Length: 136
Image (cartoon, rainbow, N blue to C red; front, side, top):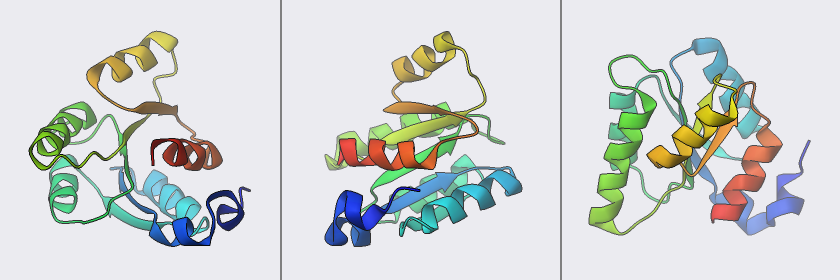
């Protein structure tokens, strides 16, 4: 497992705050625990509406990790609404898709839609941490 203090440095490890949007309880638990073990402050939401509320009311968010298939509003539409806020506030937060769609054309589609990167489930949390560092 990646040692986040060694990888990011002590100061950065204390600052990471990630919003996970996942409607499947088992996947949510795995995601939260996996990032918490890496000393990340994790916020979670079970649907896009809750996620937008958290996003709008949280300062210093490092990244958003979202499932694509969510009840009520999918992850792509949620990401678009977050991007609108970015335009207004001029504060950019990397938004990553987590999906079971494993074909390269699916990945390209999500990148074209505006996601910063796409992780295929089951996700590699060390890779997620490296990707967050790339965007910070």
